[in-house]
Amino acid sequence: METQPVFKRANWIQHTNIYEVNLRQYSAEGTFNAFANALPRLAAMGVQTLWFMPIHPIGKINRKGTLGSYYSISDFKAVNPEFGTAGDFKKLIALAHDTGMKVIMDWVANHAAWDNVWTKEHPEYFDRDEAGNFKPPYDWTDVIQINHANTAQQDAMIDAMKYWVTEFDIDGFRADLAHLTPLNFWIKARTAIEPLKKDLFWLAESEEINYHKVFDATFTWEWMHSTENFYKNNLALSSLYDVLYKYNSNFPKDAYRMFFTSNHDENSWNGTEYEKYGDMALALAVFSCTYNGIPMLYSGQELPNIKRLKFFDKDAINWTGPCKLHEFYKTLLALHKNNPALSACNPAVSTFFISHDATGKVMAYLRKTENNEVLVLLNLCNTETAFTIQDNLIDGEYRDVFANTIQKLLPGSSITIKCWGYLVFEKCK
Image (tube, rainbow, N blue to C red):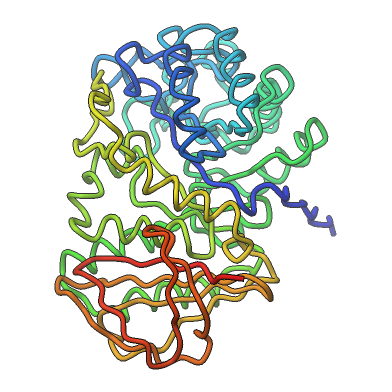
């Protein structure tokens, strides 16, 4: 029997955050060089890892819209000329590294454009219908299904992934719809690529538990959908606890989970975080940055961007005016980076739900190491809530990280939070 390889998680992932870059819509130019101008601002906000949506050329056959989907790739070893040159991308990665940021690439292993270079060179790399024609997966008419059973195709895909590691010095991959590609491929890919560069980050767009055999982190789609359902349908707060208990019970203890309130799919197809969560949006952002996992932001959330960005056409983010949430995210990202109690999947960290007398309204949790504590209080209802702490774990002086004030908290302490509000406390040493 073949032995399952055991992959070592990079230490830097434990305290990282992720910022998804929609390059096309990030600026009027939509180029690597234009995005480079944002690096100082993002670094000042505390961004640590940049996730670039696919930067490859986009297919022309059966293209959707005027510019097409990033995820309809015509050449896995090339750069979309609309974004700039390979040299521009290489320079941008070097600049990001100089600021202390990591860079991961979106990788689409399940499908490709109808006019992908492999369709002529190696048509056997793709599935066929009964008539012998290329066929799309599902109703995704702008792409065709890759034949995962073809080992030469697997080798070619892995070779393309190696190219971006060795030639561009990227720091990892975000696997698009990872579960649509067999787990054995990802095992083969990581085994082949990992020796090329230490400490790569492997992020899967999936909630398949067994994919953690390969991937360091997965998405929390169920949490995202459950929070929207909770807000729109006035569900019980227990419905959210149920998801978190399920995650804690079912996933490996060292499985990193990525929490978010928006991304390219959600924004374009289902609405902005304000359409989905209304006044609860910022409380959920606090949760994403303080619960046991990796926080992720999408391009423009720091403004905040309140419009759906078109997916197949140009629709640049409007950066005129200040980034009103810059300090909000700066505070949270700094806390996540610097306080050991917020490190993800750290066996030295315990997460406790805190007892209080507003159980149907307030979610309260403490993240704690031997020497560090972060207390998070989220009022997840549409009325101001006064409540009393009833937990012996809370005892001492705590700093309100947003107000930068010191407060004594202990069992019996009374706290009031405005509707859909939040408080985050760091225990003083």
